[in-house]
Length: 263
Image 1 (cartoon, helix red, strand yellow):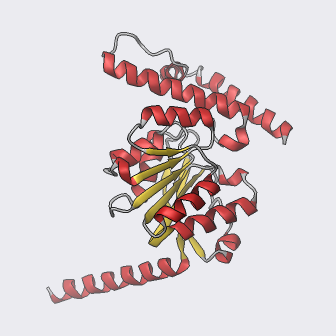
Image 2 (cartoon, rainbow, N blue to C red):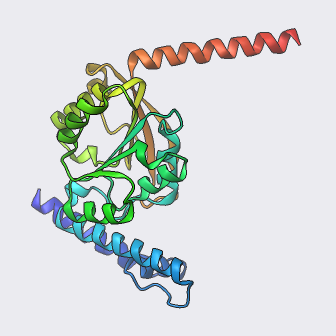
Image 3 (cartoon, rainbow, N blue to C red):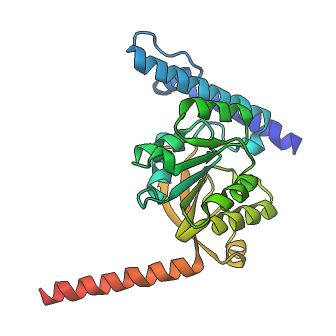
């Protein structure tokens, strides 16, 4: 495991060096290091400085523990928007975000129209938690392990949660943890509630066999091709909810065809 971690760290550093070879990406790397231009508007410059600092904290934490953080950089805007779009952020129910990181997905959820009081963000890393707390003072943010936090929130919000949006690196986590996380998540979400997860791999980050054992189905929702690295967004649903939604969609399609024929 230590050897693999060192390889991941070396790969991250190589990635940064490779990006310096391309002029069009030099500005992005410079911004990531916190060396933003000083001639910008004061408010924008402050926001950018804050974002750069958060990104740098994220990268340092990844270097310390790559398997826990799971990504070299925070989610890009395209991926963050895709995660927010896939979530149930318009029903009036609560949304819980697991692994808030520096707040890319948090910001996208708020930008999608989700009120701050309907969002709870969970971040285990203490430094990243401080970044989130400073950036989103109106959002409830918990500095806890994800499973423990879900159990705690279950007492308060069971049945009132529409989506759980996860930025956790499920692929690097033991199967037993995946099962426990999903079990606790689906105890918390209400009817038609879902679990949204992104992954850098080509298939679902949780095996079909394990999902079937938990009574869940997986759907690929979208891809974020411009993210670094490219990512895909998956939705996990209870099999019963998936079947009901499929039947309702099929019925709506049949009704639409009848109306078109009658017209």
